[in-house]
Image (tube, rainbow, N blue to C red; front, side, top):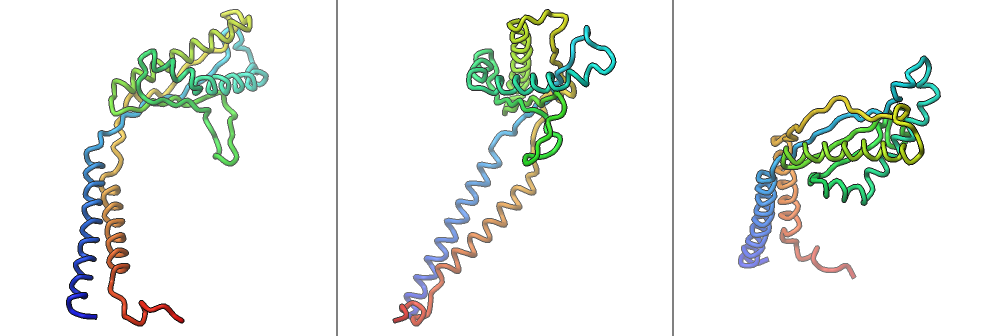
Length: 207
């Protein structure tokens, strides 16, 4: 290998590493400039009406409450109701899901409760969307029971507890940029080794 080709190879490797560093700097800038997200969440509880608060009422009404909660979650997360939330001013993303007391492989939905979340770069949008989604949930629950002929005193109710309000989700900048730095070093090392000059006997194909 001549000195000229060796210098050219080194320049190529330096240029490739420079590209990796530029890309990493761009990703870091993008991460730094991305606005934080605000998350608002609460636990929605479906409960028996006050007219049926008698001993052991939960034992025979629990399956109905859980089924009702599941039905409400399915409807609220449908495309139609997502459009309704946006039409009512809920511009942020929202999510309503049954509370799982075990894991994804073996879900345990043993309580008539769900988690309502809304998130947005704007705390006002997160708060507004949360309110809109919960209001539509209450309306949906009332309308469905009205259509079924359930009198108001006997209808299932929906309320929420543990409303967090919009909380900033800042994450961990040190962890993020530390991970980015590690990936950059690994990528630069791989590029440098991949483009290193090879002895002529390695470059030739084995007959």
